[in-house]
Structure formats: C-alpha cells, structure tokens
Length: 181
Image (cartoon, rainbow, N blue to C red; front, side, top):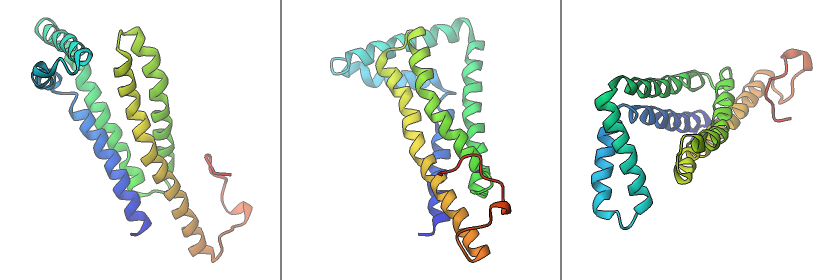
C-alpha cells in the first residue's frame, strides 16, 4: 500500500474519532439515560460505575430542567471537537507542509493527562473516569505519531526524487522546527 494512502487512512480514522467524540457531546442526557437503563439491571456487576452514572444523570436532568443554558457549554465542546477534526484537513491534503498540525495534536494528546489528573480531583471526578479521559490522549497519540513519521519519510522521498540524492545542501532549506536529529 502506498505510504500516502496509509497516512490518509490513519489520519482519517483519527479525524473520525474526534468528530464522533464531539457529536456525542450534544445528546448527553439522552445518552446517559440509555446507559443508565442498560446498567440498572446489571448494577451488581458494576456498582461504582452505576453509582457514578446515576449521579451524573441526575445532575444533567436537574441542570437541564432548571438551567438549560448550561448545556450551551457542551454544545461548544462538541463544536470544538468538530473544528479540531477539521484542522486535520490541512495535513490530510499536504502531509509535509502541514506537519506542524500533527505536532500540535501530539502535544495536545500528552497535555490531556496532566489536565485530567489536575482538574479531575478538583471537580470530584472518580479516578477511573480520570483514567478514561486520559485514554483519549493515550489512544490519540500513536496514530498522529505514525502520520508524523510517515510525513517525514514522504519528505525524504520527495527530496530524493527532486535532487537525486537523499542529502541536500545545508543552505537549500531552513532546518525544520521539529526534527528527528
């Protein structure tokens, strides 16, 4: 399989994950009702999870009833995820020129972990849920790293095809901001 095709398949999967993650932020109460109804007959199997889902569900139902405008914040969360997914159209179209977006994405994936471990306890989030939040960064990093490596490889192949050799004079191009050296 061609390198560019592999790159685009992996990056498309990452973009789809961001898009779906964002879309799930719109119907939070409905989703929690479904999860609650599924967990209720199984609460003996997952007592801590059932308790947490019950608390969150109650909080959302009461907040939606008394202060529906609060949900506007999660609407913006959803929108943000979709726009971040759209930012990856640049590297999808031009993997070499837009590699910096992959680097930014890898940084964001790493940054998820300290934010979850700092803000989670402050907000009373159970440790298991904090680890679940961290999983988004942990799972998101490898595909971006693969795409970043493949982008570097495509750049090297482009240089080789253009110059006829894999090395180029030092003054031909400024050094990239993020290199493997």
